Image 1 (cartoon, rainbow, N blue to C red):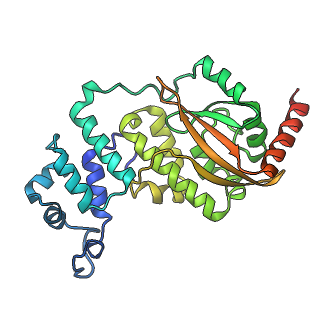
Image 2 (image 1 turned 135 degrees about the vertical axis):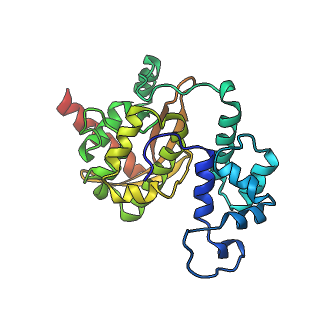
Image 3 (image 1 turned 120 degrees about the vertical axis):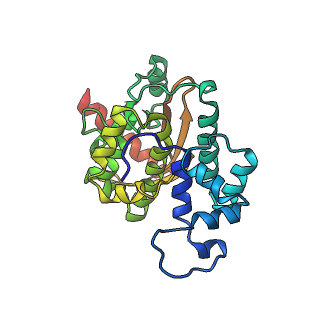
Length: 284
């Protein structure tokens, strides 16, 4: 498994080719191959490129593919919308890096105004997350919801470590929900790698997560994903089933985002109120 470092255009292009079977693009499969996926010659033919040019792209020796070339590769590789966006972003970063804002530190502290906003959002559970899913701040409703499931057990909590390494994560999500969240968060971490892969905290997190086979399996497929609203079912040990819409609000001028757990039904709203009241009573 590749750990840390820059997850660049050439690496992403190779990973997508190696995961696309010939029969998926209408080519005959001659049986077992020594290497997985499409051969370079096959992708070059599908994209209308020369093999020599594709080789230069995959080896990082050509750093300025045209929009037409990117579109041809995206179509030939059958990329998803998220993968197309990631491919375009990687190409832009490589070609126009001096014009793009430099990413901030993984451990950049949140603005005090954002901390105040979290309190204003209460009683909706909300937290502030950093580039590698490090939990930077939260309101009391989110703490009342999350502390009983172990999400704040660490001194420096991180949602990825929690999901893959904490035993409670397997109990608060159904198997299907756990796998879906795992796919998303690994995709988000992979998408962050071009910006933060050289950061010591990023590398340390990858090393820790490498103890989990479910993480390694996903990481090695080089997934990408971008944050979007989604529905989520939580099997809470105190209140039972809770249903939320997870809303994501990017914080301008930072690499942070607010994640709000908006109750989907009256039962969830009532349960959050009870959790919050019990938390207030015990914590003062």
